[in-house]
Length: 443
Image 1 (cartoon, one colour):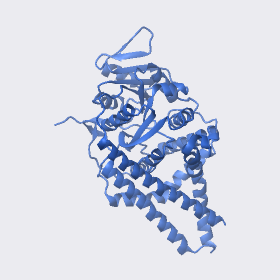
Image 2: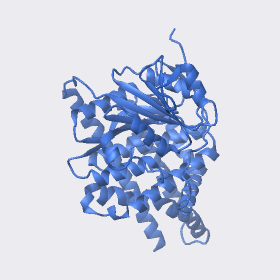
Image 3: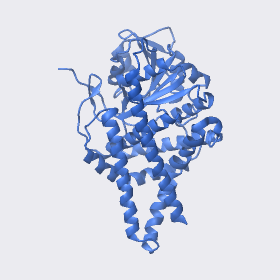
Image 4: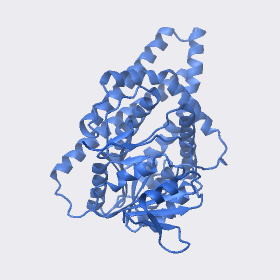
């Protein structure tokens, strides 16, 4: 009976993955076909970037250069220095010649770049920093981004174009990719070999999450998360739901779910577009990866629990009937089932209840299926989204297999640990180490 339940569970999960990949492919094809037929938009909305920064001195200046170089006519960049304990604010002040607008004001303008504003705030936390930036935003469309994230101009243009064409659009995002090179030229990554397994594994995770899953959810109108590393929003809609929740561990997930509660039905749209919107840094060591993933899982459980009444609720359409139950059954419960299977199945093989040949058969089948999913994601990404062919099919397959020997089990343990953490866990900024970003001069 136990084996039957486990088998049915994993079959359902893998079938769901396959369906989402097909839907993602369909979304990409339909989006590209429609884009060819559309006439250019005469005027896109003005945009305010809101970038909270806490102890970002290692990269804040170089990161901001990528925003200032964006070819947007009507842009505003607001950086919130959230009580940094390092020279973040001093670097900004010296580099961009900041001048206080009024005596005792927290608002500074740049004398060299009129579109740049900096807010000097006490340590508030990320959510409150975003809310502070929201109050100073001049434009109707805002875009939240992390300080270690590099914007991608074509993706930003596509999102703004979506807002210009769709007055019902509330929130929009795209595909987020790993920043696998420290060196940039014309806001683009330069080719750089990276032999580290940890960033490679995360690159595969991002590929599967965004290209193989979130695009499929978007096609169904069941988007539940638009990552805070790049999320374009209507400012008035965010204010209507009370802004970012300082009590939430994952403020981006919490915000989208609250927006979907408030703006439900066919009259309001939430989209993830099949375009690269930004490149972000990822943890390079297990300690910081653990901190990040525990926080993500704890935030997921917290948000789902606070919005439990939406589960299987037809009032919220596909989001309530499919998307949220999927998050409960797969993203929340899977670490429990997986670790239980890792412990029980070898024992049943040892005592002779299950043949080792059967165990080996299903293990190989799982690895082959994982490689196929990876290849499908790579195909979609290489041909339609980033068009980055720096990864070979062989490397993608090998790393997809290696992930199952230690990495996935460790990730399941972290997620299981997060489930049992106290709900009183404080929401605070992580101490992820940043890598320096270097702009190369064009020869």
